[in-house]
Image (cartoon, rainbow, N blue to C red; front, top):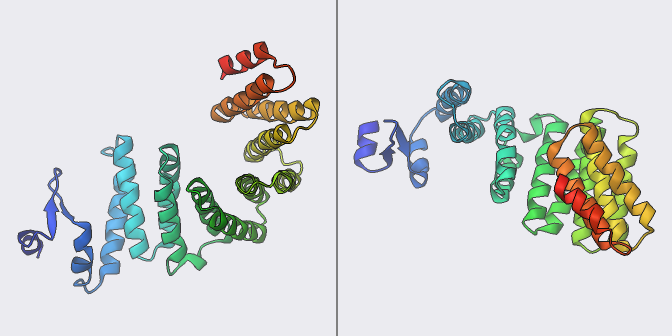
Length: 276
């Protein structure tokens, strides 16, 4: 069968001596398999092992294996495993700016038959990441709808940390919409949702919300001490949990405030930028 498909150029031979189907010919191949779900499950198991094995030494190998895990998991109707594969990929995709890919994968998960069968918290994660991707892509109204649905799911799951993360992201959506009042309200709601939670994740979200709050206070023209209190507390929390990327971004925010507010404390601004 494989040889006949190869002769018809429905599949190609890869450098690893594996046969690989061309994307446009996948329906032609899979429609002729009686029990394709079992085949996809076998492929899912294979690529899961491949992603953990010694051969998957490079980042590209792991990313490729996880992408194939996601593809086969959805077609095997293993939505939870597809979600886990997406979780392993998401950070890489986000770091490299592939928001279109994140949005596409989230929508595939959301549209899959078994999506309602995974936990409310996991569904909330999918909608949170979809909302973030859509905001980056400029689809503000769709981002807002996705984030609001994510918040509802996190409330059901009693997940206050991710609820706060959603509220903080809704603040950025309000910023895109030009509403400083609503933006500030969302950050305050995020801080209230976290209460006195002292976990690392809660401190990370609290630091993020406080930094964003400091920015909107700065743009709104609030008193200098109010602006700097928010920004400095955001930086202190980032340092407390030793989160380097968060610390760098908070130093940048604080440096900008020193440079732009009052008479401009350029020495303090330079110190922040140099540390960052």
